[in-house]
Length: 273
Ligand SMILES: C[S@@+](CC[C@H](N)C(=O)[O-])C[C@H]1O[C@@H](n2cnc3c(N)ncnc32)[C@H](O)[C@@H]1O
Image (tube, rainbow, N blue to C red):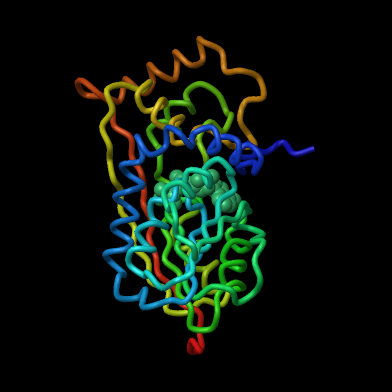
């Protein structure tokens, strides 16, 4: 029996359920996700080219699938997400676009044929996957030679204030653990990607109080989905203790929450044919 710290790997079923429940509220609170996706598309716009088929992994409500469709009107779109209700919203958004396929599936085991895409886009989705080797191995498998990947994910400093506040209360993993940029680059190279370029940045957002932050995470579907979470309901006094510990970090007024954003581009060797 393990005596180490509790496991913090996300559980797939909970991830799908959690995001599925947030499909209706997601767009209203996804400011950070929008900003990061726009940054990805503008920073590496010249790398997108004119792909025949684009796969959006963890497409959510389809906002960026629609952006990609507008940028690459001739491309066939594969819109993939683990949560079916997210896909329904995406389908409504993309409306009458004929060259679009909606696939409910897991980024770690893509239900797609090898070499079926020329470009993979994935904005703030792969942080919910415990096995980055599986994710990038799958991206590599479905890409054709010369194909490109644009992705963003959260880094380890994400929600550090919340993690530290909970650490004053108990040893449960109340906040997901996220991979560091070096580990991401290593996983990309090991999967067979070349031309790996990445960047990281900390964005600090302000909230009125911890409740506002928790409400937003819930509306995003991004609240705690860790395997090591407390199996019992967290008691009121434990929650109060966490709130006090978080508030103690605050100078005046609201609270701050940090998000470490890791963005990257990578390409499969060989030339597109
Ligand atoms: C924060 S949302 C981002 C949605 C979209 N990319 C955007 O930028 O608005 C994360 C999405 O990833 C999906 N997701 C989480 N884990 C996944 C997995 N293992 N495979 C596929 N999709 C996943 C969730 O259901 C959710 O829709």
